[in-house]
Length: 559
Ligand code: GLC
Image (cartoon, rainbow, N blue to C red):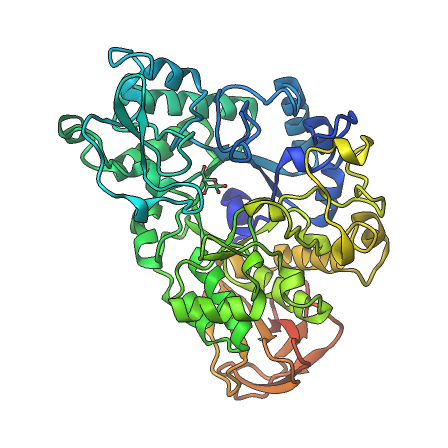
């Protein structure tokens, strides 16, 4: 084992934190969070143990899709600050050991982007072919829209030129035509720009849609026969411009289809993929108090190149999608965690954050985060998770989980000095509002969720086996328990999670061990002797969790 490899392939042991600058911290009192405000909070992130910050889109935007509708790929939304403010942030993050990646939104632009405005002026426009058009009326595509509450078709008539343009997302987000080499040049140039400024890579939005060539004329498609060759080209380009930069892709597909987006065993496409399947199976497992679905998801993951890696999460900025569960499974999760229609979205997801879904039970919430950090994969936190923020069910759609970060007990969470009525986004009220859930109080309270998450981040960083090791789900008799082992080189970490409310005693078989081998608790004081045959018995309380390092004589890890 070479510990130095962990700084080389840094993403395999990173702690990623996602935030939207707009809702994080407002430094100038105009009611909108800004880059200068975020810089002010970099130490907070460093203290929590964050090593990679993922910035949601900060580009100029009409903001009709929370910034995922971009009008300029080379600039900063003036409401958030300037390019100068961004560089100051990047410098400060680097000083605190935090890399920064940003959303790369190039499946589509805003319909206000100068390219689209030019494209729709005339069929002869040099930008016409930046987008995808059709002259004949489209068939019914209502089953292909991403936002069924708003859209009926993936084609929208452009009155001016009498043709339809493609948009998989909202109709104000026309899809770019990546079969067009000029579009590909523009995408690479934009990436090069941000890498030059100091970004360490990108969270690539909607990758399967980006590679999709629906509606592209046959002639053009012939020159773009293999969209994955394009993804490989982007990855090579990234590597040439910034050797340690990553592409973290949004690819919500079944595991076997995800493999292709890593570039299979070659690992030459996306560096990391969010594991949407394991996330959905985790919720099913929690709902059933049965670790089976989660264990199955983990062991069914396709084998990937050792440089590639999964990103694990329990929440992101979108609906908590359950689209890859069966209808019956989805209904089980809805029944357990979001039974009311106002808690659900698009018929496939939930509007809620984890703590309210788990009834605010501190033990169960901690067990879920303990799982997140101990599963093989890089944990990605969505801002506010570290303090257990809740959602605003009265907010429209996905905005329910896009409320201002709660810094202090003040009504507005100390997010801004602007009057409440001037805030761009309304803070959460009630049981999960700032008076009860805020960072300032939790940082000072050693028993808080914040301190627990900070400890998990620290232990996870100290256990590179979790990121690098081979996973084994250990046999034991309790269906509600997940017992897994990650072994890498000469190190082994075992984690136990009880998804059920009742205490259990878990017998483990760890294989033949040297006399004197112990299991050292990593989250609490104590250790357990392993007998010569490799057997050990461990107790877990209801919703209990334990991380244990197999301590053998001669190990180089500090126990
Ligand atoms: C991704 C983003 C989502 C956005 C969509 C369109 O799915 O996560 O927030 O609405 O892409 O850009």
